[in-house]
Length: 207
Image 1 (cartoon, rainbow, N blue to C red):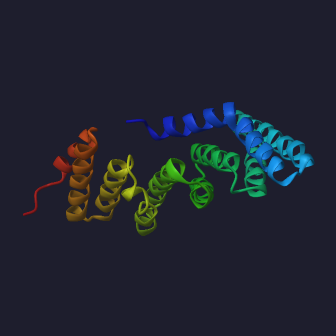
Image 2: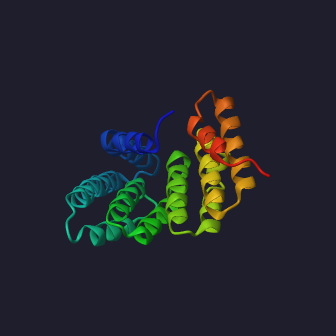
Image 3: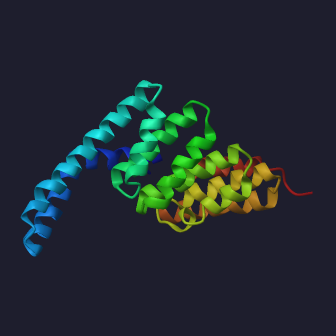
């Protein structure tokens, strides 16, 4: 099973390599249909500019520039629904978490959750749930897992994390059930839930 980081990096790599071509193809089809010849050049140029800005944002975050957070936030807010903005939100969340600013990381992941779809959304759900748990916002953490818990490929992670949250709340019965759900989901998809099993076995038997 691919890790969350691998899933995000694969999508980032795909958009880095093919993003401009995808948008250019859509633009050409749009222009042919409507006869808007000028639209092709304008939209393609805008997409290329956004791609370059994204690369700059990532470079600044990785370098730890003082203005990196503000630059990334501005880039994301300019067009929050774009794929580049969603990917930038992931990078901003990681940088903020590494800097110890968990609330900024949670906010960035909320932007990703609000605008992403498919695997990216579920990764954002799970990452935000972990951070919310770290801040002891347990109910919010559980709510963040709702969609991922029903998504193929994410059921194991979501159920295991649900168990962690419930255990942190002191709900050993709920945690046990969640870890069992993780193991059942793993068996159904042919993957491993060894860590969930270890956690399950570490819960003291009810007296």
